[in-house]
Length: 126
Image (cartoon, rainbow, N blue to C red; front, side):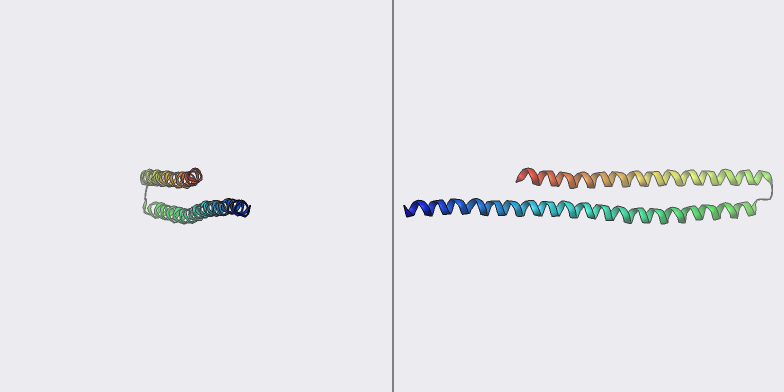
């Protein structure tokens, strides 16, 4: 009879240990996911701040270039040429800006999908 009570004690302790280990793994995965999401958000905020500063700097440079060329223009034809050149610079800037934002969007989608994939893979492995 004492053997039966010992075997019952051993059987009840093992699932409790397994449950504690499983809970620790779930907590670690949750922590990893939340930390990864927080890191992505902070990276995005830094990127947005850098983009705003870069955009303001570029726009200021383009405006200074327009004012400088307008000051150099001595006729109506020269003013038309200045507007055409500055318009082309503005279009080129917009194209480069859109390409940069598109590449950033791709990187963010890849990072987010990687974070979600890691979370789903670790969930299935448990």
